[in-house]
Length: 457
Image 1 (cartoon, rainbow, N blue to C red):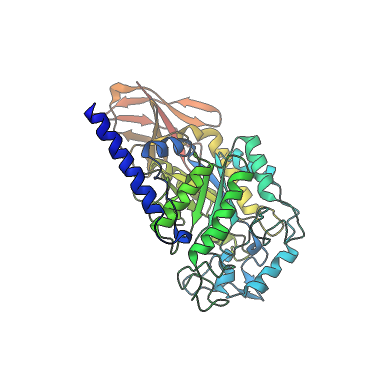
Image 2: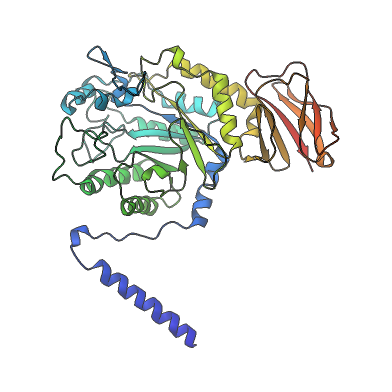
């Protein structure tokens, strides 16, 4: 009984303390932060993400009109030979009033949400991340917060996000939404780092408030996105810039009060978030404790760019190998397409997605719901595991027509090669050490990555 009373008075004291604390000081600056999502909830919410393995990124906006060229001059950045075309407003120091005129001619009549989502599904992608607002501040959906959006400011006068959401629901694809956080070159209060904010329109940031930007644009637009487009599986933040830990936690809690199962990535800033987001096109050396993702381009830019000539595009084989490497390290591959100003997907992207679709049609079981097997190594290849099955991904054909896998031979039931004609049984035998030697055909089914399935008991 004494312990019960003691616990009651401790709880009462804690409640009174919190109430007093949150009512002290300037009311305008007072915000009550909800507790962080528990580790258990985070693991449950990210279950679908870890099983999915492969997603589509869509970078699309006003920047697809100049496509890397402004007034006859290519996008400028001394650090890169072929800079990001979607950064043209900042890199070429284009005044926001001049840049905003792009909306007058933005009429993407070739945009087809069902085709794009269908292409993603065919390629084996389980989720889709759509760019709702990039660094230029232009909303690619029907926002009531700002008239600077594709419905109100362009002759197109349609909401592509609504179409994407409907297509994703129809095809069973998880819908996720990209939102540029710290960078918004159309907003004076988006006071990002000096070399990343709009200094040409707003050279002096005195009097501007990042918190005001969060309260008056970011959170109201997030509220729209979470209320008007059905279930949102992830808010994919970018460029936290000067966001504080308190602000990152506040955004996380704001999202989870709207949709509790919606996850966020760590680009909300300060290591907050459910999914550890890698740098652009970066693949870590090994597995990580937290669910993680590698966002990647097929060429150089994320948005459509005429400067991305064929020499800059990764081959289909290279993209497949990256998918395998990432899955073998326990991560997800988020592969980008950049539709052009008419909304059409570049033909080089379509070709690569079709090649990946052909590969996934045979080998998807070695990608979905798999775990890494880093302790088991093979030369020029990767290994994944799902249940009692071990998948050996070969990046090239061994010269000896055999391959040795260091696992207990007594636990192996059967070995198969995954092909377009089905699973072909392979001969294997125990080695002198702890392993099995598998005999391979003279030619493997894929030039990129061929997969051996080992059934164990």
